[in-house]
Image (cartoon, rainbow, N blue to C red; front, side, top):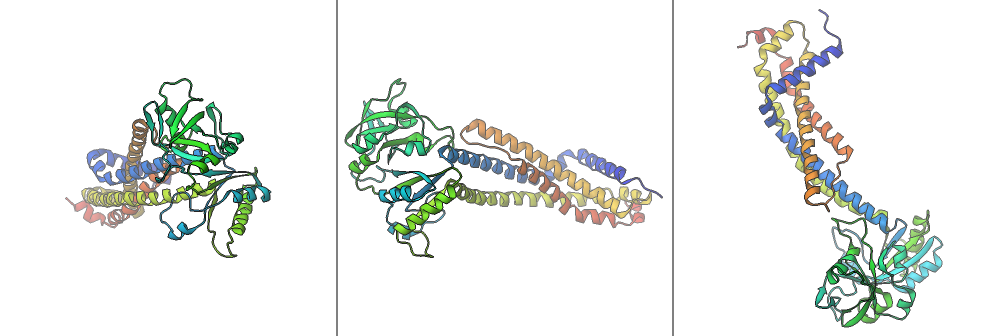
Length: 423
């Protein structure tokens, strides 16, 4: 007896699998609930992590992709702390000047005194104006070229000039959060005097809000920039120095290598010894965040795997029940010429159809949750990547294939005579 062509058999098998799922809708839903939860969890977390990563990349690009950052301590996200770092000597202005003079691939170098008022001490960077306080400012002493190197835009007034720095002038440029807190509904802020750390400061500029941010916020929104030499005058104990090095276009890694060699020589690091400072490009920051996202992703995979395992066991169990319920049907099919592989294909496709529909439902729920998260928390990005969709659906089909093998083989090995006698 000649059977149908493979295409006809495939189509018929798929139709039979779909009919079987539709005839037991509620049972099928309960069976694949673990698949739904597993796929939904994995895709939702992947969408949030992808959105966060894209935000970080946009933020770093906005500051400048040619920039290199050097500090005597490790920068960026860290999972552990090296206590020996505390003994490292801070970088100096002489280091910055030497890099600028000797590194041919370096276009410019800015130096920053970060956290001028942070950690207590004699200087309090709380800003007051007509009874209003702003305590959340990230006060930094910066060189005049810091604005051009990091692509700072000023919404009102101007940035710090060379004259301000040389004269140690009490001037400041503030971020948007400070401006909104101290001067609500004010049309003109530049030229106003405020009080900070026992000194009168003139606000000479207000920063434009950065487009990119992390959870809708950018550290520059809270920035309070004062001239570098002014910071040295009012907070001499804050001797930490961050160097922002701008490499020439197309020579970023050459600039990194040259700056690193200069710092190793000036800090007397022996050949073969690790750096006693930290220096990296923007790409390295992205790699550090990627390592953190990878850890979170592994946790998400572990959680979703439990759901997929439970769902797979449920699918195998329900397929074994289905084999028992359709014993006579199997006997009839074998009696009219169905081969063992046809029976295997039928039950495998049914299991795969079941888990595929569970994966689709999980995907739909993941899209809904991502949209809900963005609606409730607009600052929390969520972007579902295509690879997560393909992977989620592929894994769900694979679960059906793996856990459907045993029931399918059991059905194919049934004796047709015994099947026809089965009641």
